Image (cartoon, rainbow, N blue to C red; front, top):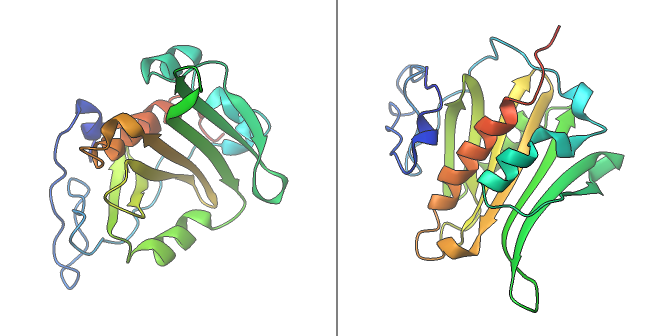
Amino acid sequence: MIMLAACAGASKVPPPAPATAPPPSATQAPSATQAPGPISPVDNPRDLTTMARRPCDLLTASQATGFQLDLPADQLTGLHGTLRCKWTTTTGPAQEIVRMLDVSLSVNNTAFEDAYSRDRGLPFFQVINIAGYPALVIMVNAKLPICTVKVKVAEQQSVSMDYEDKTLNKDPQQSCEIGKRVAAAVLTNVPAKS
């Protein structure tokens, strides 16, 4: 099991076994160029329903500033009346956004599995574990520093983090490494399912 291995910075994730082989072990995660393995089950489910009306509590103020995100976050309306939370970092007199994190929750639906089925053909797609939870790491365009990390925390419950950092234009995949660390931080704030 990978326990926050992605949090160590720019560490590389080992490649999986080929798609025709048995599923990769919990210590393996696919590279961007190889076919992903199946989604592992959630052994210690967490409960996002308690966070559905307060998504900005998914990161503490200390965690947000640790990721160089400005406070306060903005709570916004997401899909189907759900709430999401957006942190930004701006610079200069024009207040140009240089860093952004948008977190949304999916409760009582198959958003995680749908993303797995839909996004597998994208230029950058990984199936990994973050703190023992199945996660998808997705870049629609591997040349842009925009990465989506989706973590399944229970059956029909997942959290999605879109992370963008324009300071990483020369190393866009680094946005995924930071996105994985953000996801690990978010998990610490989601209560266990009772």
